[in-house]
Length: 447
Image (cartoon, rainbow, N blue to C red; front, side, top):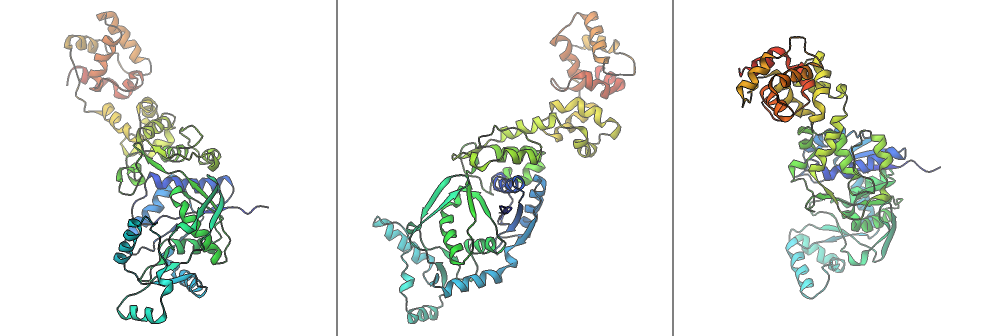
C-alpha cells in the first residue's frame, strides 16, 4: 500500500504572503486533500534580521482565510541543533568545506571569469588551502563560510509537473550552506527538515528546479530518502512581471480587506495556467478534484485582477444570505430584513462589501436626481398606499405610464434617479419595498 503523502509549504516570514505564494500553498494543500495525505506548515525563519513575528502570524491568518488547516507546524528557528548535527556530519564526510573569500573578492573573480568567456562558477580554490593557510586567514580575523562539495554529475528525476527532468551539477557553483556568522542559508535546513519529518513530495515553483539538483545530492549525502519533486509554473502579473512581496495590493491580507471571497482567490490562484477552465469553485474538495499537477502548463500563469472581480461576482450572486449574514449585520442591516435586502441586491454586487452602498440607498439620506419636476410630482401623487410588496413597483409604474404617456427608459429612469439618486442598480420591484412609502415620498418631493 502506498504511503500517504506528506507535503509542505515553507514560507519565510519576511513579508506578507501574496497571490503568488497562495499558488504553492494551495497546490500542496489540495494535493494532500486529493490523496489522503497531510500538510506541513514550516516557517523558514533562519534569516534572523528579516524574519518578523508580525509576518509569521500573518502567514497563519492568511492560510486559515484560504481554508488551509496545517496538520503539522514548526519553525526552523527552533531546530538549529538538527542543522548543526547535519553540518558536522557533512564536514566529517568531506562534503562541507571552509572558504574564506570576501564577497568583494568573489565578485572580482566572477568578473574575471566572465571577461574570459568562462562561466562564473566557483573555482574551489578553498580546497587547496593548507592548515597553515587557514590559520593565517583566521588570524587576519576572517571567518569561514561553508560550501557543499557537489558531485559533477547529472541529477535526474521524474517531475510531477514537468516529467523527465535533470540538472547538470557540473555547471553549478558549490552552494554556500553556512554563512560566516554561523547562520544557515535556505538549502541545508530545508533538506534536513524534509528528511527529519519524512516529507514525501516537494511541490514548489519552477524557479527551484536548479535547487533540486543540489538538494538531491544533499539528501543522498545525509543518507535520507529523496522525495518526489513537482515544479509548477509561476503566477505573474497580467503584464508578465514576477510577483513579489513588494506588490502590497496583491497581498492576501489586502485582498481579504478589499472584500474578496477566499474561494475566488483560491480558484484563480490554482486554475490559472492549468488545463481547467478558470471558474469560481466554492468547495475545497471540488477544487482538489480539479487540481492535477500533470495538467499544469509550462508557460507562466498570468494573474489578472479583473478576472478576480469576475469570479468573485459569480460567487456573490449565488451566495445564500446565511453566508453573508455577519457582514450584513456589520453594515447595520437588521436580521429581520437581511434576507429580503440580500436577495434584492446581490445580483448587482462584485463583493459583499458593496452591499453597504445599497443599504445606504435604502435607508438614506439620498440626494434625489430630478430633471422633470412635473413628471415626478405626478408620480408622487400616484404613489400607492402601504403596504409595499413585490407588485407595488409594477402597479405604480403602470399608473404613471397611463397618466403621463411615458414608457420604457423615459418612464423608469426618472423614477430610479429620484428614488436612489443613481442611474443604475437593483431591480426596483425588490428595492422599493425596502425603501418604503415614507422615504420614497420624501425623495419624490425632493426633500
